[in-house]
Length: 154
Image (cartoon, rainbow, N blue to C red; front, side, top):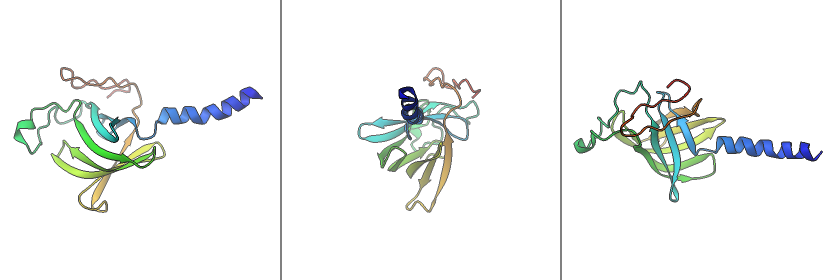
């Protein structure tokens, strides 16, 4: 009986630890892997692994010409998010290296997916991108090794 109770109570805890709420690594639709991490009291997003399908390895679309040669590897693309629960955060900013634009942002877990919404002004004027957990282990990129991929074939 004791074993059954331990299994019943540990299964939800294990599932929660595995999901980790919004924190942890997520794969975007293009195949790059991003990490959502605590940055002091805020939540930030950084690029952990760049997809081999990525159009560039540097920040070529940055509006500041002096930043266009900086590597995307490790780049912080989200900052200032405030957690409003384990499964959502809001009031942050998102930088899109594909366009060089910066947007207001919010994120929310829906089931096992992360819905990341970038918008200008009001959230109704925006776009939502759906991220999923990586299928395999991710080796974080480094400045000298930009496209590491992960075991699922990225």
